[in-house]
Image (cartoon, rainbow, N blue to C red; front, top):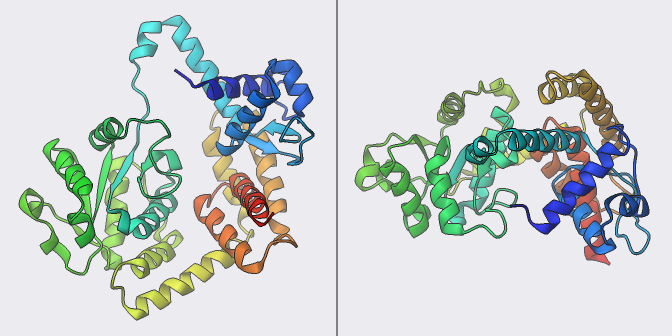
Length: 368
């Protein structure tokens, strides 16, 4: 059952779409209030919720009291959310029993790790998302922002379900993870369920860290570039996803190796260079049109109207990104924001630009 904020958010999505037949016309607070009949407080909460989910385009961030937002409209993801929600509602109406028993889409990749290895886990996530085109909600990693358990979830029950149901279970093996009761429980539960496991050694001690029944499981060594390439390939096979050309993510493999505990000075230096190249690459839009075409075709394979809207939206976002650093944002903060957005959304310029704007606004609020 949806929460009150989620229910109100759906009313806003419906109002934004159905009031203009999906043409992306922006609405202000007064217009939305008259359409949704929501109070200013509920409307503010619903818009912030939708914005946090990346479903809105914020055409104007400055709202007029009592509204904390300016003009908003649905983006490509918002329109898709509208279609998917309506389709689910039709299915539920036609056959309530079938709809109720339909299996919910779950986590595809579960990463078991010690909280002390969170930075390494973050690099593994970036590698898998870039190489395999995974989305944020495909991955569970409890120590990395954006991949944690949902608010209000029963931690133990949710973890038990995802440990068993995930298509691929990755265990980051280190001295710290082998001392973690939670990690040992997760590894043991997955092993006991006799489901696929992909242990990745991120500690110089290597296979000797695997004890008991885990000793017989082959684990790949994250310090070896060739074995990380094999790791990506094997995860892709389990997910039935063909990895991108390795040249597209080789820099992330080098970054991962440089982030490992006890990485050599040479590997750390290479990782720094790769990080610098990623930031520089984020400002290279020479291949943007091809990326946009592939992205929008994959998002809307059988809807040319939505492909057109998606393409226009993505091109507009590229123009926004090309503006570069805002005058009130320092060079160091700008590089941090740009790098993270580029890594989080390598093939979605709209979401990249949206994330950057959210980060700028948050940074300005902190300074105020």
